[in-house]
Image (cartoon, rainbow, N blue to C red; front, top):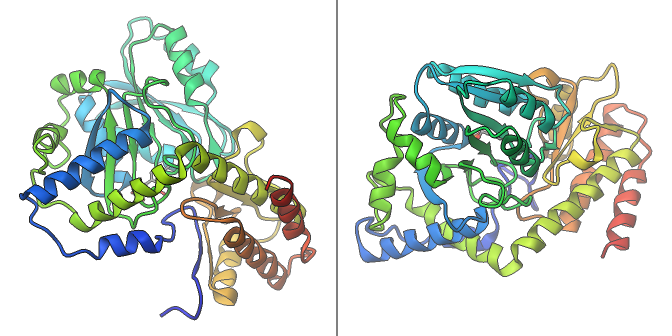
Length: 390
Ligand SMILES: Cc1ncc(COP(=O)(O)O)c(C=O)c1O
């Protein structure tokens, strides 16, 4: 049961679903082998290409989740015993690496501390040291949702090119696509994977991939066991506007509407809106006298801010308090920063006033939790920035 007014789901996804999308999803279910369905699939695939910024990539859609998308990316391109270089800088990049290991793939981990981005120079050095070019793929998370860090994928591509290494580049854009600029073709990503529940503003329930020709060629030789995640039958049937199983029709109705909304706003404006709200949030956090986990300003995420809890306070306890006190949902600390950070999501269908409402909730609940946060200071910093940049 929820109380009056808008729920404050200030977690970094799933995000609130806009009315337009809710209405689109309430359409009556149609025959998934009929002509109306084929048209729906066509519109979704074309619209997604624009969002992935790919003309050459092939879109693969499954009912599933981001975790399933990791698996789909791995099993279609790699074989047990293959080596990959996994860039690990947080909870989700750790999960991506673990998924590879579960398939018997040998994982070389390039570990950096939570709060830092992927060091392109170290990737170049690792690939340069792989004289026999045995590393088959580089695994990277564009926006590490657990730490609020965005890595420079263009720099990663340049590093791979500088090392003259043929490895595939597999990129997780679960919390960046349709919120932070990501250019599949220009940055030479081979598999880009995402979910629907963040920048795409949909409920959870899909695994979405964009696949390069090079990755398609790799899939011919890849020997990881695969059945549900095998992308060959999906690609083949999608060309005819179908799926090899019963698809998530309601989510596809919603996806079509989300893609129209993103086109209406314009991708560049969507990125700009997220960047501006992200900066307003960070200024508010500093105004409250708290620290941001991501140290490098250039790597701070436009979709999520991980806030360091003051020494002696447990972030899980604070988050439970915020929920009880005001019905405010904040993201928990994950992995190594469990209990040490809380996360404020600022992505999806979000505007200035909604963000300010969430930030007011953070200020009030930190104070009622017993921390010496000056009331209004964070809000004032965010408001001043939003006015300056209006
Ligand atoms: C960067 C990143 N990758 C993967 C996932 C896993 O996605 P899902 O929870 O949809 O399986 C998440 C979830 O938040 C994520 O933020």
